[in-house]
Image (cartoon, rainbow, N blue to C red):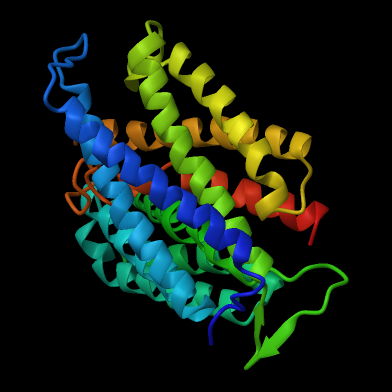
Length: 328
């Protein structure tokens, strides 16, 4: 099954614009690399930007392939991302030896959660992890017979499932989100919504470019750290710059990719920017608690999958339920 290319035209236009933008950014960085542009803290800003652009090319390529091969491929993609993210999470957080068999059940929850997405069962999708999985996992841990650090271990597994599976699965559900009162294609039980693919692109573009705009604004105008003990590079100037840029971008893309008008898109852009910031510093807090710099080394310049998806873990569920409540 593939998306209807006729109805996907707005998505392709924005996607093409991103490719052009990245191409220009790549060429610009090539010329900048010939000049000495060093940040105040002694690091090379041009190198950081180059690494971020390289990672963007990887993400754009993966996202483009998922759109080309249709919604099923997109759902598989996010299921794989959840698996890698959960694996990274467990590798950097302490788990008890007695819970090794319990982790098998944690990984098994991933295909079940994405199955609810594939068949469009919103009711089960929204309660499966917060209720059924959260009740089952402690029960399975009790059967192991180990009570030392039980509460800490249960909380760790719960937060891992919430952060890497439940929140990220909202990205996949955007693709199959049906329109209220509109004709929705039914194919083998999968509810296909071309508007959902546009919503997914809207969310990912705003969230990721918000990270970039906060990074650049912070380097240029940031002086006062917001959370110096958690993420000293996150400054007021960076946050404000990200809010302004993402709000304007949200308004610009709202009419093309969403059912919102420009002012609604601006407000949502502000919300995505703030939620992305919270997701970023929340992941920073986890890494500081674990005593590590990056969650992994999968993406050049960004560490692991969680380093790249940290903002989306907060923006995805908030954006999804906002769209679901008001428009779908």
